[in-house]
Image 1 (cartoon, rainbow, N blue to C red):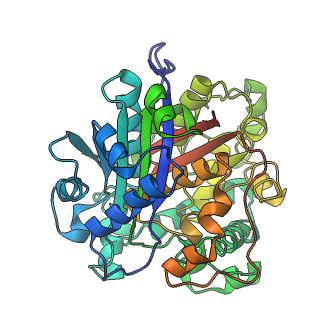
Image 2 (image 1 turned 45 degrees about the vertical axis):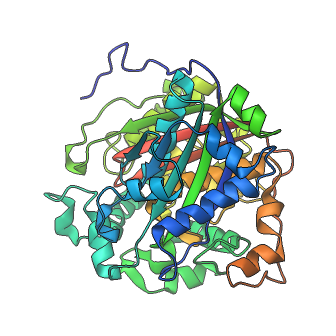
Length: 456
């Protein structure tokens, strides 16, 4: 059984405030042969420095940068080691220093964490975080096997070299323990595909019924195609800065009040039981009767200790008492519908065993108490892995700045990507949003970051 020492749970702190200044995206596609990875990263960077209402020119932003962080999940896809070096040169940042981060599906979130640490410590004052993924130079089958290599090759790989198979087992276990109907998971897919309809960047938008999801072709029972994230090509950029630099570049930066990470064993069979790590909105009484049902231990095979650990640290760092009440927006890493409902519990939106209530109550919808994945999520919009955690934060930053319509509602922006703005377009700008949270998640829960943002 895992037992924490008193210093294991030390709450992190920044030596100085860290801000988000600007963000940029490409659109996301299954294939993007007409643009190289370098070109896609430049496109996202240009949006960040030219279209975010900054007070200085793009060249002045470039001259403010003194460290760079790059985010790419797998060298395999583009068959290029040190791809970050090419991107760094292409963006004009040589000979400034840089690092490239890789933590599986959480690579984007971990990259922002590394950049925030550089700014918070005083090592750097302006840091672009640049993420991308090139997933179209191999077949879908080969791509799935590359992605599945982020799980334990000695254990999970025998299940078929495909993450959907790993999560299908989790779904079966979770449904058994918590008596969750398939319709509940389908609701998540319906919501996220629909919100993707209002994003010019999205790869997989659609308006579906619960029956459509349940009757869709199966990937790995019980998960259908509409319940799984998409393999994508695209890039995202987020610029972080200290307070002085942030306000010299931008009138309305967004503050990162916390960003924390957690991990768990790569091999799921090695996950030892432990007492539930309680969040600020929970007590021992919360789980007094929980283990009297089908659930006998925690975290087991159906909860993510890495998510709970990251949330515990981030909530205490940012002073979050109740995520439902304290957040106005949330972006989860909805790689599969089952991982989404698991995450609801791990980050304290509902106690363990009751995650279904968050989606079934309406809380997760645009009109609800905590609108979740208004971006369309990984299921509806994208999972260009190295860009994913960065893209989530860019979307939240625009929401907190009141700029969602600027970056989603303009017909010319849709035309930029060869699309037509839908006639039934709907604004998803959340009124008066002040605080948001994003979850970046890897593997079968091996790495997770939780980021808390606040309107400055």
